[in-house]
Image 1 (spheres, rainbow, N blue to C red):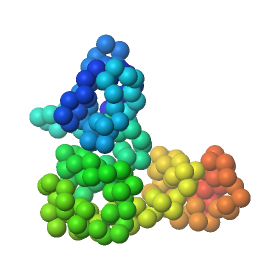
Image 2 (image 1 turned 180 degrees about the horizontal axis):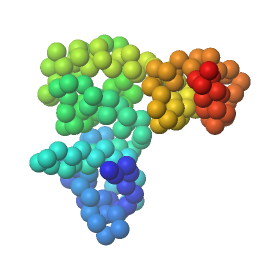
Image 3 (image 1 turned 90 degrees about the horizontal axis):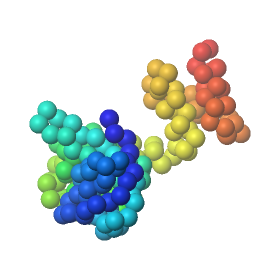
Length: 185
């Protein structure tokens, strides 16, 4: 899996760019907002979602990890594929999309080609709670949750134990050690 790419932008086309990395040109599908910020001939860095099916292999590029995260959350919704998710992200910044979901703005979401009322309602219903949770977690707590998940704990276990850890412990590794100490009891 490809997580990110850094290289020179060779071409900017209708819905994608060609990024040369080490002599290899990668075709990366990007949103219209990313297209408008990208310039041919300049160096670029993109977070990548590597989408593989038996009949295709597409790379989707994002300027920030939070945009990539929102894209992957949209993909988790039944009926939302990568092309629709990318089109949703093209309606504005990731923050615009998040606020449309958080406020239940059906009009904004249904303005996207391929997103009907039912799909928009499903996106709002399923993502609203996840986006609220993500906003309330600090970057350090997200790292602790990921570390605990890599050790086999569930996301809910990790979030629950973090509530009991003193906010005075601010170092990530110290928070992980304290969480493990409490989980082992």
